[in-house]
Image (tube, rainbow, N blue to C red; front, side, top):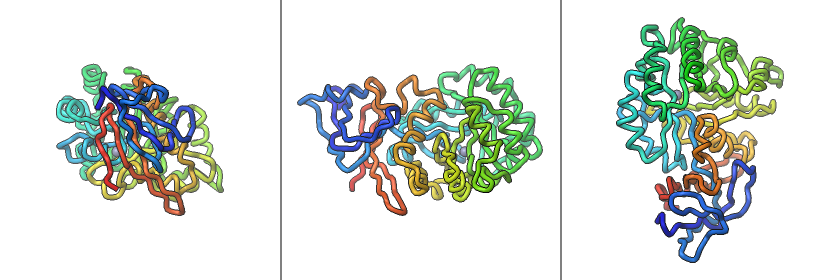
Length: 363
Ligand SMILES: [Zn+2]
């Protein structure tokens, strides 16, 4: 299919860089996106009328270490949900990073990038949690050695700085993760949960490009809004360029916090699923999280930006064309069926990864 190419025709094309949503063709040739004007008679036509064509979805918060307690198989969950890039966030730490790369990252058809856990044991199980409770595991030197060994796969450092994971060690672990991220020139992703560390402790340590995930959790004890206005702490962090990520998961998303924040004019920077073994039944997939934001009144182009080009930039993957419809970019595409109304739905009708159709819904 690659050499002759194909054309997705009749859909509404949502280009997150142009901010546009308009009828158009998307041409795929040799595994890459080609300019619409290059469509030729030999190209196969794929009718996508009534559907929305976007870059392949980029899920900034997932757990895809296959064979590990939390891990879902990226090639099982990605294609049916239009997701072509999954960022694993801290499933593996230094001790198992090689196993993750060899067993999953190098084998998956889905593109995988990773945040390495500051704890050398990683997030071994969400049932046990506790990877920061023993500080000997929170070892900057071994984390840095793993980053040096797998720099082509690692796009950031992850720390789950909350009481359930760290006991009283949340702030110490946060500082050690900060130290590694700074030394390696990588962004830091911090999971928000019950203090300590508090939201203020965490935001004080985050700068431009660092990520607060589970930003709308109800567990931090600090609301985003008071009396309909953003609290100063949040407004100030946004001005500094801190990235606010959803990370829906089992208990990372409180609909009322989200509703209040959106009503106060605050949209998350990135919309992600925190998909893993134990959240899968609750989350569904990334399209289901997108639908929740449509239900909150956020427009489709805004939702698509937050699930394509913005997470690609946050993970440093935009330079390779991830999350983009630019001619020359890898042909990773999602064709979405979107329904409006009081309970909008989003689902993937077709998924293209590197120019190959890897999912096609029958209906
Ligand atoms: Zn997670």
